[in-house]
Image 1 (spheres, helix red, strand yellow):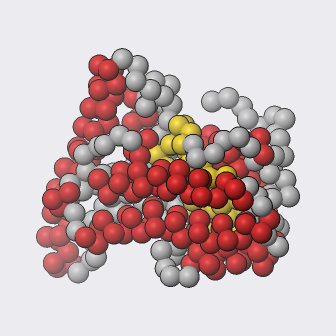
Image 2: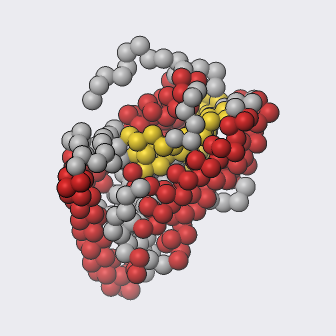
Length: 305
């Protein structure tokens, strides 16, 4: 990975940012990078670990982004603490590995609530705060799964497809107020999103990323770099775009190669689902004696892949 620590631009200096899903992974990297480059930041996450980010100019907010009023409170905190809001990063996301026939309505709606609906609500409230200033930037963390379909993650792919279309539509609605809305189509990133599904989520994603043309998965800091650019005035002419940061996974390098990569990804996810289904069956048998709750393979917290 290229060393990006030298000659760091302060492209967001003096800006105020709100980052969701900021306790770990990509969200944490985004919050810390924006802060390091001169922005004031509100870091929001349901995970209490978000409190560890507290420092001058960086205010943690422990909250469930799916609750009614959460978006209003988050945007209000940014305005209360720092006087305005210039940047919103909708990063929070969760995933579940289940075949559609095994998925409950609760499973489906939980994924949509975090990945799509919360982004809509935070965007709506952010736009209200940005409009009087005639400027602002919203960056949504989408996925290459916004465009590719994989077995066992229908709820996730649907939510990320919705996020991509929210990005495009909102961009058209608010550009007249000087507010730019863009997204990043993220590929495999070494985070903890699969920790509830496989024994070592980061290791799995690191190996999985080897299927990309670049031959590896991304580090969270690499995605944070793209966010910082899109949130800055350096990206002043980019509106309604989904910038692909997926190591070339979605580049059609010959139909056969592309299909081989898609098959590899899909087979890996299906294998996870089969393994997890078997594990859950065993766990359910054990739980009748222990009464332990089952999470159904959902990865909680502010992680995105």
